[in-house]
Image (cartoon, rainbow, N blue to C red; front, side, top):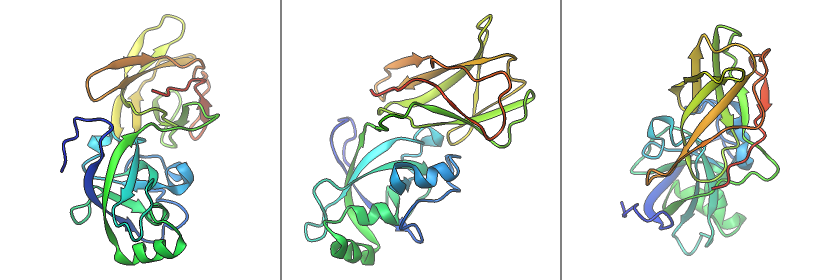
Length: 235
């Protein structure tokens, strides 16, 4: 592998794809995004082992481009990491849609897919979701007021969410949440009343920024519901 200390430099690797994913990714990804993880970014998603980082890498975006000049375009494809998985010396197991998206045209995509594995180069890039705020999706396993689990959708920028606190809005007593698996944050006996989140966004060089959403999670939150945080983080 190449030196990854340069944040804008490309890293040499290989990519494969998983079958039956020509229109979208998997809705059973290890990040815990569910069906959202299958359709986010138009279905241009990927699994990775090395970049998964015990779930910290969930939601990160990468520019991935294959290096075969006969088949491959110069820009490649931008993918969102939604799952954990490893292949034959590969850093990415792309959706079939994303793998074909690295090609110059449809004919080249068919030839590229026939290869099954491609030499690639990749780099971390900023995630962009125009007109979308970070959204809190309450997991179906949640039960008000005893247990709260949620994932964060539309993670913008290229920072990692490394910690999340849940705070009572009246006295601002905060509780640090557990990363249960992937991008799923959990707590037993969550605070009562409307709840405010604090999200810690971190860079690889240790630059940390706490972000407090404009909107709160309502007191009567329900499993399966989504709540707009009212904020975007584009750095």
